[in-house]
Amino acid sequence: MGYCAVLKCNREATMPYAFWPVCAQHYNELDGGAEYRSQGSEQSATGVASPTLLMGESLRDLNEYTVVEPPTTLEHDMHYPEGALLRLRVKQVGGKETDMTLILPDKALTNLAALLSRHRPKPD
Ligand SMILES: [Zn+2]
Image (tube, rainbow, N blue to C red; front, side):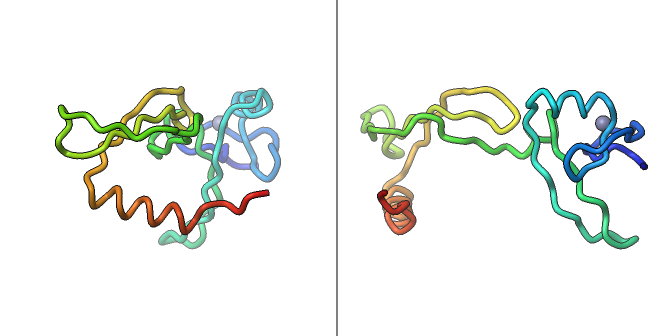
């Protein structure tokens, strides 16, 4: 069956999980609901590499965050002359929830507002 499809795992794959051959440990983690993201096949010098799964550290290395609480306010604080403050509750993909604050200079805020208004989901 070859090697486990999880990136950086060198163990022998022993069973399939959906489309991917994985080792017993990763099978158990996936079966238990562990987060993962599939990475499409990539061209390599030797041809098309097998799709891989990102889990744990590899997933966190993506440095991606999901906004978990819709923001409701934009703060202006004299101690932040750089711009308006957008406080966000986010969850790192493959990681934990945390708070982060985006400091938005006027130009960034203008562009972001225009961008978001163009891509606003249609109301139900
Ligand atoms: Zn594995």
